[in-house]
Length: 348
Image (cartoon, rainbow, N blue to C red):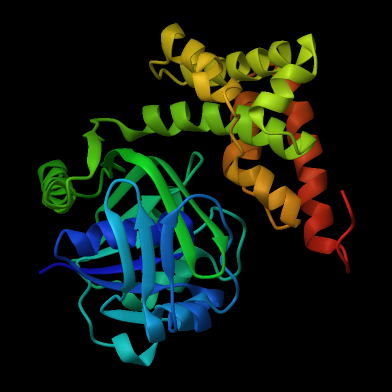
């Protein structure tokens, strides 16, 4: 039985914690500031929400009420352990086969790699499931002898109220190795193959890819476009696209600028994929509310660095002009600065 530590018990993290446990793994959940709720009761429903600061206690005491269109309802679902931190005394000495980082990719101190360090052992494989580009770098640098896997996930999971997680539809991820020249390539591939057995056991849909960076950029193009435009406007995608003819033109320009950066890096970003990001029926049929839009509404820190700032820096290094990306980065960065520095919330 695999020992898995899941770091970051938001809606996406909770959904994956269930999936891993459903596959037969022994799962320890770490919700950091959400410890008190997870210990008492966590309900996973599969829709849209934000965990309160007491989630971990909620989960540990009463269990998670997981409601999923795919996996069914699991009231009172508990995990093997629920902890506040990877340094918790209750897991000292546990040899984790995998540490899965599902925390939001925002600036934090100590960093995520620093926080999980007490739980990393010689044979631990680290899996990073986050939005953005460049996410695996800090883990490869801090743990040069450990294999680092990376995944982008497409899952509609939200938390409409404390301890309630709603999972709608199916979930899918692209997963691969953050290749390290310091480690044997066959050994790195073997670690990926081992983890895929867990996903197979859970009947979770995935695509194992030889170069994960291509898909990191593909997902980031989506996030950069729709997370950004919905967060700045506080409109879902339907509302935004119906607001003016300029709305689509701006979205198209942002997608094209991001694709230019990725292609200049040598990544294969085909036109059909880009078109699909702008023509998905759900963009206009009901509309999509992005996680960054929800963060903006709640005036919480947003994933500016990995979705906007890092691609913009790359563009500048490559000598590319990306004026729409630059403008969006400035606007979202200003919002994020206000959320992190204001003394009280301001009505939008």
